[in-house]
Length: 324
Image (cartoon, rainbow, N blue to C red; front, side, top):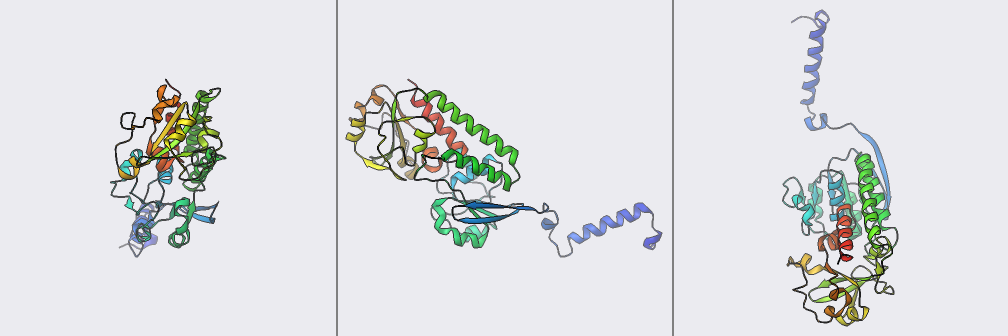
């Protein structure tokens, strides 16, 4: 073998490449050798604290369906997620072998989360009581959406979260496109509701019982941001609504009635419709007589409601309520 100093230039280049390649297998995993270069971390301030997120983030655990939808919209792979209540528009993740089952939305399985080897964990207030334990596994960021009162700043929180995730995953341009689409959906709703006098009621159906949601409640944004006129503006309710009777709905006499069928989601039953909702008092309302009872997408309204796909579907349902 010739001494290195006697080799031709192309031989030195080849030898350098061989030695470099062999180093990848000399005690260093190939995945580490081919990993993307480190980027500047992103610091996120949220309701539970201040989280520094090292980048790049290659493996993400999303513990809320809203977060799953955000990641799906931004084309970010999902390492693990709860698979107990997955909306139909995210169904491809339910059986995906490369997306681990992280347990239940309200009770994530911490061992499975750990087994997913996340670089980042995304949560909402539904998992807030696990924040400390999750933070010991990986940097954890809470999406500060208020599920109890969406009357003020609701869609701005969605915009901000899209912007934050765009920074974390280096998807700023795509995040900006999703924000523009969100604004277009809001404008679409306002174009229909502005100047309309119809009053609407949002009710949740649960095994034959009803609760309703006022202007400061889980569905407050329907009134404040989509421009729907409330049939009962005095009702200030929270996450699960205020229990009401059929007589209440009859007396409120809404022109439009939006029915969210919780039972269909929680028990996997067929969604209610005009034939299966046999309630004589509801049939006496203006909404029923005018054919403006809308059995809305329960997965978008109840399981998510705070993500791009969900909001677009909610806008579709709201607009449909104004159609004869």
